[in-house]
Image (tube, rainbow, N blue to C red; front, side, top):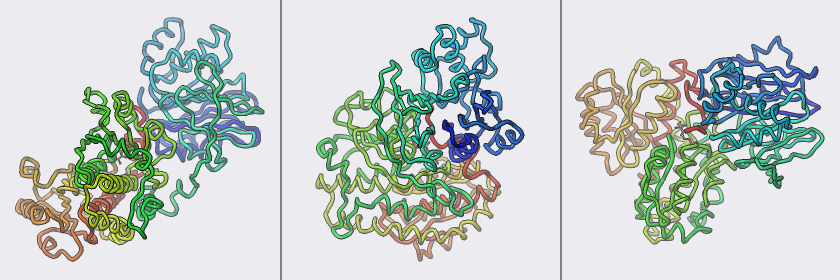
Length: 615
Ligand code: F6R
C-alpha cells in the first residue's frame, strides 16, 4: 500500500532510478505519484501528478530533474482524495524538507491543530504533511539536527509509518524510518537505495537491510549505513542478500502480470514443494514442524487468520486439517478477529496466511494471539516481510514476487503448503492411514503437470469471456472443497472486471440466491466428479429450469453435465482434496479475460492496492 523509493549517491542521476522504482512499485498504489530531488544547484524540487507514474513522467518532461539525491512515492489514498496536492512528497513550510510516507498517523488531527495554532499553514489534507511540518517545527524551535528532530517527532506520533526525508541544507544525507510499515535499505558502492520492498533496489544491489519497527536509517554519503533507534541507540546492521531476480518482477512477454502469474503456477508449485516432498520416499518434510513438533501436535484447536484471497485459502486449509488431522479449525477474517475479544489460549495454534506478509489486520491478529500465549505459524510469500518476523515459525510458499494486484499464484501456493502441513501433522498424529497419506503425496507431486493441462483451456475461456462481458452479475457455486474456490472465483471477477459476483455453497442457492436467476444470470458451477457430484448436478438443473446460463467446471469426459450446461470446462481428474488447485485456474482465467474484454486495467484495478498495510 503506497510505494516508497529513494536514492542517494554521487555517480548516478537519481531521477531515472526513482521513476523506474516507482514503476516497479506501482502495484502498491497508483492514484498519484511524486518525486523530490536535490538538484545540482542545491534546490529541492518536488513534482507531483495525479494518476499513474506515466503522468508524473509527462509532467516532469520539461522540469529540472538533475541531481543524484531524491525520494519518490506512489500513493494509495488514505487521508485526502487522490490529487496532485495530496500526492507525496510533501514540503515543510520553509520548503527545506521533503517527506514521503506510507501508513497512517492516527493523531494527525490533534498535531495539525496544535501546529495551526502556532501559525503554520497546510497545503494538503494529508497526515503526511502534518508529520513533515512537525519535524520542521521541532527542528527550528529547538535548533536540532534533522535526525534528532525526526526522533523527537516520531515520539509524538501514534500510528504506522515508513518515511524517507530530505533536507536541502544537508544534501549528503537521507533519513528513513519505519514502524509497522515495511522499509528496505539497499547498500551499494558509495550509494544507498530505499524501497518499501526490494523490487526497486535489486537491479542495483543485492545487499539489503530490512528495517525493524522503531529503526531509523541514516544514509550519509562517504559514511557507512547507520541504523539507530528512536532513542538514538546505535543498532547493529543485519545485512541480508536478497534472493530475487529481475525476471521475476518483469512481465516476460505477457500482456499483464496477472496472466504471467496464472501461467507460472506449475513452476511455482514445483518450487513450493521443492525440498519438502521427497518423491522417492513419498514423504513430506516441513522443517517448521520438525522444530516445533510438540507445540503443533498438542494443539487443541487451530485458528486460521487471513484476509481476502488468503482467507479463501484458509477455508480450504480448514477442510484439509480437519479431515486429515482431526483437530478443530476455525477460519477468521483477521480484521474481525482482532476486534471481537476472541477466546485464545496457550493451547491454540494460530496459522496466519498472507501473500505480502504485511497485511495490517493479520499482523494485529497475530499480536493479539501471541499476547494470549498461542503459538503462531506463518504461511507467507514475501521473504523477510513483517508477518514471518512476527510469527514463531512458518513456511514460505516460494511462488516468487506476485505483482498483479489480484492474487493468483499465492492462492495455489498457500493451498499447497496447507496440504503439506495437514499431511505432515496427520502423519505425526497418526490420524491418516499410511496408504491415504502416500496417495495424496503422490498426487500432489503431479499437480503441476495437471495445472499445465488445465492452462490449455485459456483460449476456450477467452472465447467464453467475450460472451459474458454483458453481465452485470455472476454467481459462483461449489460444495465442499469447491465452495472456497467459488468464493475465490467471484472475488477475482469483481476485483478486476467490476462485475458484481457472489460465491455460494451450491446447496444454499435454494435458500435465497435462486431468486436472482434469470436468463441474464451467468452461474459458474464447480461440478467435478466427487462425492457431491449428483447433488451439484441437481443444482444445475434447478438453475436451468429458471433459464440461468451455466458455465460448469467438470471432470474430463463428463457427458452428463455437458448436456444440460451452456458451456463446460474440463479438468483432469484428481483427488477431491486437491481439486481446488485445478478448479481455481479456469476461474482466474475467466476473470482475467472478462476484465480484458471490458478494457479494464487488469494489473491495477481501481481502488485496490497490493499490500494492505493500513486497517
Ligand atoms: C485478492 C487480493 C486480496 C488479498 C488480501 C490479503 O486478489 O489480493 O484480497 O488476498 O488483501 O493480502 P495478503 O495475502 O497479502 O495478506
